[in-house]
Structure formats: structure tokens, C-alpha cells
Length: 410
Image (cartoon, rainbow, N blue to C red; front, top):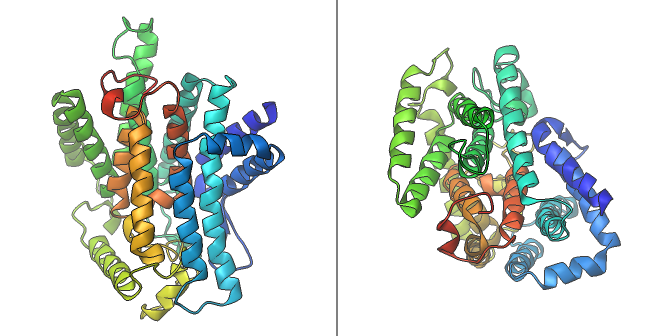
């Protein structure tokens, strides 16, 4: 058990390193994250405890929905109507294997909490530590390495004067900041009178919230802004306190007015170039689904299937976004068809049902964000949500009743 706990901490630490810890293989388009390596070690542990793993999975209500989607994804891959080489099918199967492996982060979270090797409070603090660490690294990057244009040849977008930290993408980093704000807001005590918090602790909590919020603003990520606004709106509705969304909108408006515009297209919130790109990307996803509506082109063969549609194929293999679409639901539909989308929506619905407040708000934020990027399949996002889902299994009843008293265990 001690070894599993250490591997789990290693996995959490890999979230701070993010895509900066990835390395390219000899196969074009195939990159391995440090998170993949740490999750792989966790899976190896469970292989040595296979009977216990089967018991946990068998007793878990969510597992059936998850493995249904895995089965459909596997079927879509091997029955793909698009011609692929053996190596292309193998590489595509690795993405499915990654998705399966990350499920064991959830299994591990449930097991460590139930065995009392870790507490919910400790896990929440670890996640907050990850978020604040990313914020600190982000500010160091902003002042010391503000220009990512020199790495364009490696497949990264040319971001300039935006905080992207170790993620090399301000949009995905922005979502991690939103996740952190949600945890800080729903876990922290607003006054020293609750749960015995001192004034120093309360000041630290408020400073952390403000610090992470400012970091979010300097990502200039509109999809991340929307994610936080939607999550705050939902929180205001279910808590029946409209003041939350009003305060947030006021803060957003004031922050946008004073945000610096040092130059470059990326810091222009009114920019339309990226919107036009996303619309073209969505059209491509819809076209692929229309051509292969039942089981799609296979999970995840998009990088190769795009060859049939893209006029400019020069960066399909080198680009870090070449294997996806700028919408997680379009990605699922294009690769696994309407059958796969149905299974995936059933999985999300079950996640929502058993989730506590923290997971529900984070899931809402991720879904809003995923309408513009493939966020739901981004490794750090998957790990974060699986951990929150595991936490939700600790003493919570399913359904919306967990909203009644927002707190640490929700």
C-alpha cells in the first residue's frame, strides 16, 4: 500500500510538470507524457493486485458505463472504414489504452481513501498545491520566457505574452486554474469562526483565490473565462445565491479593462482568427461524422483520417492538436460515431449523478471548455476529474442532494 501511495503522489506531481515533461518518440505524432509514465506505474501495481482490482471494479457502479465506452471505442478502431496501416492502428490503439489506464487513477483514489491511507482533506490540499504551483511557474514563465513562437516548429502554437507555464498552452492551463479556483472556493472557510481557522489561514485562502484568479486572467483564454463563468452560474443557482455570479462578472469586467495588451494577436480578446479556425475545425468534425455516422473513423485515428479531408497536410503529424478536434463531443462522435457518443454521454451522466459539489462544478467547467478544445481527453484534466470522482465516493449520496451543504466532502 505504501508503494501505491508514493506512485499516486508521483502522479500528482506530474501534473505540475505537464506537457513540458513529454517526449517525442521515433514515431511522428506519438508523444508520451510524464503523467502517462506515472499512471503506467500505477497500472503495473494493480496488475500485481489483480484480484483486488477486479473486486473494486466489480463493486463500482460507474465501471459498467466506462467499459461500455471502452468496448465501443475498441470496436470502432478495429472496424474502422478508413484504410490504415498496421502501425497507424497500433498508434491509435495506444490512445485508447491511455484512456483505459487513466481510469485506474480513479480506482486508486477510491482505494486509498477507503483504506484510510489518504484523507479527502489531504487530496484536496494536494490538488490546490498543484494549481498554485502552476500559477507560480506561470508567472516565472511570463517574465522570463514570454514568447513561445520559437517552438512553433515543434508543433506548439505561437503564444506571446500569455501565461502558459509548463503546459505550453494558455487554454489548458486556464482550465487548470478554473479547477483550482473551484476547489479554493468550495473548500476554504470565509471567516476565522468556521472550522477553527485562524486569521492567518483565512488571509492565505483569500490571497490564493485572488492569485490564481489573476493568473487565469493573464492566460487570455476566453474558453477558460467561459468555463469559470458557467461553473459560477451553476453554483449561484444551486446555492440560491445570485451574488456569486454577480461578483464574478464584476471582477471579470474590471480585470478585462485593466489587462495589458503588450502586442500580438493572442492577447486581443476580440480576436476572430482563432474563432474562424475553430469553426473550420468543427465543420471538419461534422463532415467526418456525416460520412461515418455509426462507429466513426475509429478511436483515435483522426490524425490519419484527416488526410482524406485536409487540404494542407504539412503539420498533421507534427502538430500537437493534429490528433484531435476543437470539441470533445465532436471528437467522440467523429471517432466512435453516434453509438460511441451515446455511451460517452451515459458515462458523463453517471459521473454527474455520483459526483459531489466539487466534481459537478469542475465537470461543468470542463464541459463548457471542451466545446472549444478537446479538454475532456487532455491527460491532466482526466487525472484531475478522476481524482475528484474518487473523492466523491467518500460518504456522499448520489444526486443533487450533495449540493445542500457545500463543503470539503462535496
